[in-house]
Image (tube, rainbow, N blue to C red):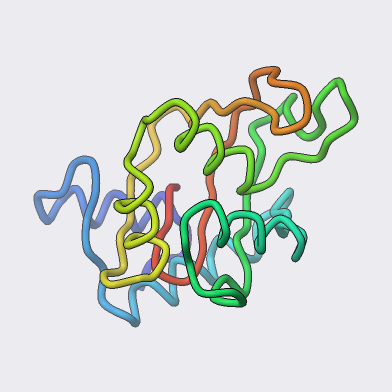
Length: 145
């Protein structure tokens, strides 16, 4: 049983996964529990969850939580905004990094997708557009860590 998210990533890499993997329900719950207890984990506010749902055509109320761990030095934007999953999803949608349909399907959780973070993921602050770096973010069926 993995004790850290790094242990989980190393275990998956030994199994031949190098960038992403589909996890079992039990593995995903374990991964979420590991990150939920991390220092610096932030909840995306409910009004921003609703915005993400509208942006990606998700059913209203589908997202119960979407957490994020900002990278050191990015805990708050210079404009005063606290990073959230909205920065990540809006940046991906606005810059066509991923198609909205693919993001929607991922957040619906058809598969428990685990993407292995390397150096974090850069996004634009939803408030002012400055760069914001996140170490990890996750919701029920998706995790980047």
